[in-house]
Length: 107
Image (cartoon, rainbow, N blue to C red):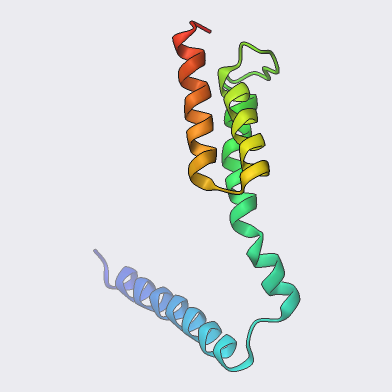
């Protein structure tokens, strides 16, 4: 590899390191603003929704809102249990249980 490439790689690694360490040190001294802290607390929920909702609504690549969409039915059951109990274990058990029953039933 040519020497210029190594120089580019080293400079970009240094820039990346400096921005990450700089922001870490700045936030350590000043703290995260309350509005930004509330916003970042919602990021995991948004990411999970972005991953799960397409799988529930588009199981074959097309919108399927019928009762034959086992993913949607199991997801709805899991969402209901999550809303009622706020317990991750029961939510997963409900979703898996409903999916298992639907599959055993041949749907």
